Image (cartoon, rainbow, N blue to C red; front, side, top):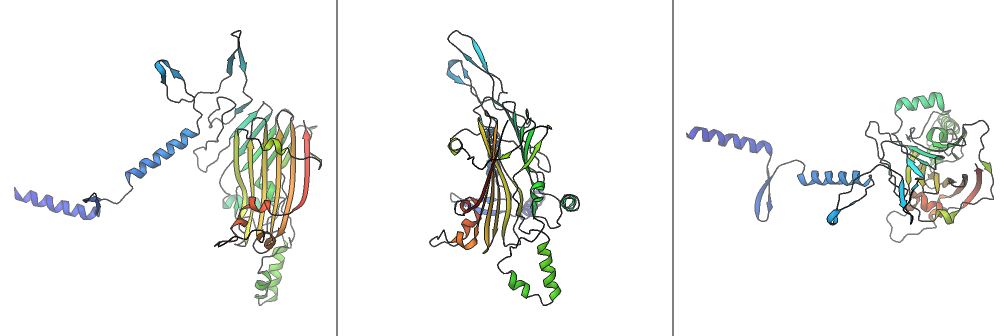
Length: 386
C-alpha cells in the first residue's frame, strides 16, 4: 500500500516542476500562481468588446405594465407617426437612410450612424448614407497597397517610379447627386497623378553637405538627375475628381467672391455620418512628412468635407493645401474652396516658444496648429447650383 503513495508523490513533484509555480503572498497567505493570461484580463477584454458592439447599435426602450422597463432592443427603421387633436395619424418620412446592410439602420433622423467594420481579410468597409433621395455619400477604407499593386501603379497608372511609403489605394470618399448625374470623389490614385514630373527645387537641410561627400562627379550628377524626375515631396493640389455622368450635366464654376457659411458650420448639429482616412503618407526619409488626409461629416441639412495635404521638410519649410467641400442639401448647392499656405520652417517655429519643453518642435507635427500659424498664399472658390 505504501508503494502507490510514493509513485503519486513523485508524479506530483514532476508535474509541479513543469508548471513552474511561482509563490506569491495575498493577505499573508502563500498562493501559487501559474504562468498565463489572467482570467480577469480576459473578462475585461470581453466586456470592452461587448460595450463597443452595443455602442454601434441604436437602442430604444418601451414601457411595460406595472412600471417595468424592457431591456434596450434594436428595431428596424420605420416611419414616425404623430397624433393630432383630431386623432388622425400623419406619417413623417425620414430624410436620410443608411445604405450599407452591414451597418445598423437609424430608427429616426436624430440618431447617429457609426460605420460598423466588416469582418474580412483584408479589412474593407464601405459605409454609405442617402439624404433626401438625392445625395448619396459613400466612403471606403482598406489596407495599404501590396507589392503587386504598387508595381501595377508604377507600370500602368503613374509616370514616376518612386511612390510614397504608404498608399491606401482602396480608400476613397464619394459625393453623388443622383438626380443630376454629378459626382465628386477623393482617392489616392488621382491625387498622385497631380504630382509634378519635374524638380520641386526643395532640398533637405543637409543636401549640399551630403552631395559634396560624393567623391565621384558622376555620382553627384546622378543624384541631381533623380531629384529632377519628379517632385520628391509628393506635393499635390488635388481638389477631388469631378465626374458628370450625364452628357449635359452642370459642373463647378469659378467664383472667388463666395465664402463658406461659417455661421451654419459652427452650429452644434448632430452628426449623422463621419469618416476620417489617409490616402497616402511618406516620411521623406526621416526628413519630415508628406501626407494627404480626408475627413467628412454629414449633418441633417448639410455636409462638410476637408481634404488636407500637409508637407513638412524639417528646417526648410511647411506647406498646407486645404480643399473644403460644402453641400447644402435643401438648396442643392455645392461650394468648393481651395487654400494654399506656405512659410519657412523656422518662421513658424518661432511663433511658439515653449517653456521647459523637451520637444519644442512637437507642434509642427500637428497640422491643425500649423494651419493656424501659417500665412495664406492663395485662395480659390467654385460652386454649382443644381
